[in-house]
Length: 139
Image (cartoon, rainbow, N blue to C red; front, side, top):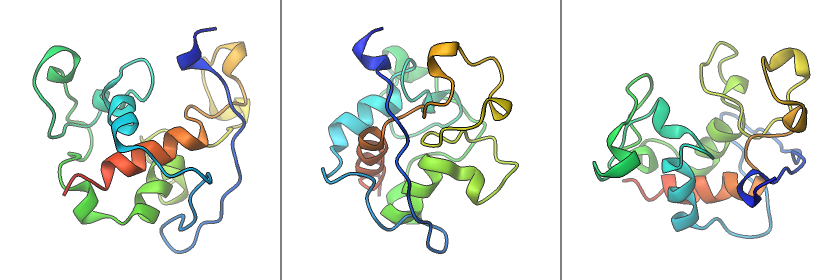
């Protein structure tokens, strides 16, 4: 299995209000790594639904319009709010189209998931922190 597809167990987190105030890891998020996750269509898949302030070159030119534009995300939401939206947006809205990127969903919640990925979060705790670190820079 390629390193980019390495699986990790979901870590538990406490939701307070509309956010997850405590980081999921002891290592601060890396905004550069977070940006790479957001634009990589084999990891985060964020640009399938979201548009944002990205160069219109290569893979970044095909941005989605099904959901909020990521421009200004760091102005609209705190790190805690972004963390919950990335980790499990369905906590806020059970009908959200946004996947729960850091929740090991029961198999019944995941359709057509390969056996190697069942019961695993889409993004590791560190990847969530990296994405949050990037999103808060989008003022």
